[in-house]
Length: 284
Ligand code: GLN
Image (cartoon, rainbow, N blue to C red; front, side, top):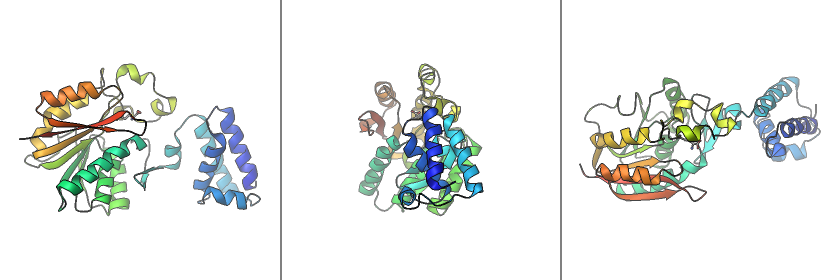
């Protein structure tokens, strides 16, 4: 088949399966397999695609037709200008998390220009912690996750994107962090979907992303309660706790922060103008 024929096939199959932007996605999936950019298709539309790559493409299209997220099919997702390896053991990094990382980078540069220790809890693919390390080299970054499989993904990303120069801990929240270890910043994007919201998630999320990375308990707030009540043991004086939150959780999480002695509560908006992150400081 030629590039044009194979793209026509992909677009039609995706359109029939009800995928939005079928033409665009047909091209995105092919560009990964041919290791080229999409512009190449316009100048080489009559070029033949070999049978091995055609089979690979057909399998990618089939997976996408069943609503599997493109990131899992391609095993990569761009976040903060870097390409993270992802698989179904980790949540796919979301662009909505980037403003929190940018905020923290500015915060670190301003307050700790010589360097600081940062802990990324529930790190998953490592996207948050590794991005901080990448753009703030003097950071001493630790990543923690309860899932060994997720940590393997984080380790791959740490090696590829940050020369492996991070510390990884395997455990439930703070469980594996050595006693006495303290950080200037603790950041987390914990599971925060409530049971009621879980049923309303897109199929692509619910069927493919790890349930344990989404499930925040009945109210969606379980992890905030545990993190906010435990973080002071691992924060330096005036340390900052930064939490990504779900829709409509800002009031509840603000109350939890205030009730646990956090002050100077700040909000960070995501790309759609929702409050996506809360930060607070504690004097311990
Ligand atoms: N932002 C993700 C979603 O909306 C959820 C992430 C999480 O639970 N931490 O699907």
